Length: 479
Image (tube, rainbow, N blue to C red):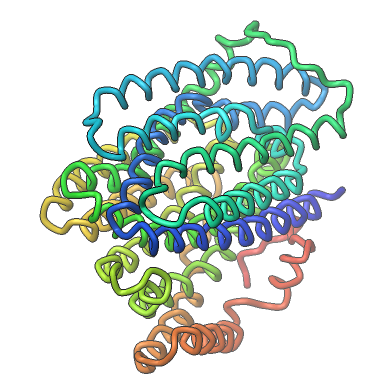
């Protein structure tokens, strides 16, 4: 299969799966927000955020390292899997013990203690056992897409069946564990069908080398968790679970867009990694084209959601979550910045610049913690969102500078026309404020589409490229 076809296949399968799974996941979040209220919704999201800090220690960059090794050396597939999985089992057990110790140091009077302790079980089902990194390295992400949809459907179905009020909140960790376990089993089953000769052999013969390779990525991942979860965690401890609930409601909506922006980056990473060593010109074409598509898709989402944030929150969660409007508007800026940062990070990873990523991630994490501490005490949930956006914006500038030292970037040129079209759309939406949410969405899409094609911010060649005719062989910066 040609590189452009592989990218298109992975992109489409992951995109469709992510759209489906995130919409289903959003349905679960909306249901939980409405039946649990801001306090209960804040508690389960706080517990998940706390678990995230320890869960990162269970794979510590090994997924990226393993995927890269598989993409570059398919002959050592089984050896790589055995070594990586064995090491993740040991690290997952250690992470769970650390989380348990932290949970027992907390106040055990409320739900947070039990939720945090039980969510700890998902360290294994979400981070240790899944073979998603294997399929990423093999560039066969349709299997990952299938498992992702299955997990979302199971989680949503069990949530509706087993949780009808705040009295059943403690069931949520077990529901998530079950859904993730089935997803992990589906991935392993798909792998065994393709490679029936595979047998797991516990092996730590390469643990030192793997940890050395993965450490920069792993530490960077820890920084990423700090960046993502600090606002929510500090809100819960500095303010209240209710304030954390408002932030979580807004973050859930912003994450839909954030993860949609990132999915293309994930699909492109193995190909970028391969082409960095073989043909940097092609890698540069992929990177600049990806930036163009990111701006075309992300800028209207940002401007549009800022314009319709209030009716969106009211429609999804009800009037009880009115305090989530301002955080949502700010978090949409953070979503765009996260998409850009993810692309730049993956580019640096493909170029084996893990240490540079680590340095910038550490700066971002420190800024996020400091800004969050300063802003939350005064502005609450909106302050947490603002802290993340400010730290993310500064980091984007640093990442861009690091990538531009390797590959010429044309992102500023590519962003101008989508920016103009998105601004025109937002003006129309603000003028029509008060209309039905879905009418506003439809009008926004129509206006943006007309303007972006009229000013040639998106061309027919771009549309053909999205169907697999990826313009690797020529400069894509002229359009």
